[in-house]
Image (cartoon, rainbow, N blue to C red; front, side):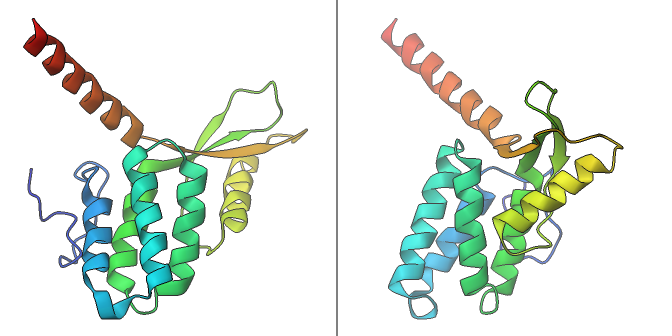
Length: 166
């Protein structure tokens, strides 16, 4: 796989079929290397976002951090945030339940809004577009492919550890 596909220095689109899990981490690392371009608080938030992405378990927290950082930094670092937006669009989905007993509808997340609640509303409206009646709607954000990839890596690491012990 070409490691430059998701580089912040490359303007090519980040497609879900070719986007690597580490791509977003590399973009954040590049932002962190620009010492004069970010404040200490912004660096702390970037490190928090990096940790959330690496864990791949708290999509809601990741989205909240991303939205906060986007408002603060996107004007100064547009290309990096374009890459992060594209990566998140490829790896986040909204799980929309129209009522507590209903099966969840998975809806793509688009970052055409700047706050989590506005993004949540767009996802809910996308589910409504299917002609459903809402009783007690709930929207929860989930990682789509990342958790599977992380689980695969952990499983293969465990297999290697078990094979080494035998």
